[in-house]
Length: 178
Image 1 (cartoon, rainbow, N blue to C red):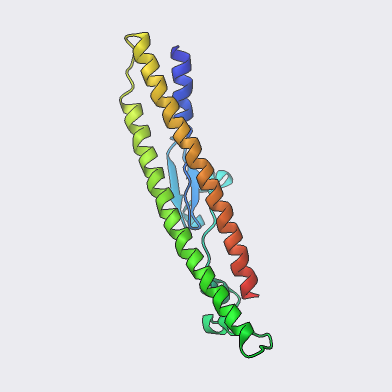
Image 2 (image 1 turned 135 degrees about the vertical axis):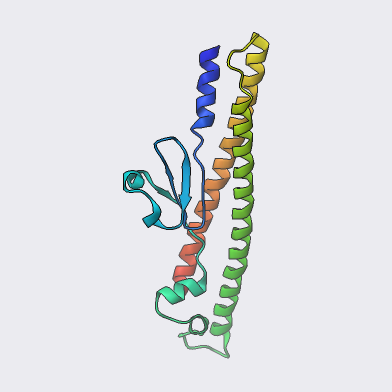
């Protein structure tokens, strides 16, 4: 039983954090997870195991990277029939802007949930007895670990779906800036 509980606790300990917005994540030799938006801040020894998360780009960011200004971006290079092409471009830019706001709000909710999971994980680890006094206590603790692990799995699935949505959004922004 102790081995099962220890195994489940290890699953909780191995919970990998998700950071967003162009953030790099690495784990140091003491097992602590660190985040930075500057790759240069990552010690050389940990750079091979760095994970990164996509950032939400805006039409303005993409235009600036391409050497254009944002107002130029919204003007259409296509010939317009009574301004319809230009209006369509403006509508698409507006839709992308709205989508960016929704993605940022979703990112904030995911970050809040991640922080709550970390607090719960710490609480669970800090309240783990050195030795279980009964089979019932061990089972109760094991059930708490299982419940947390299920929440972590659900969180990971939502975080992965979010990342895919950001990639699709960024591809649309890149396409519009061409």
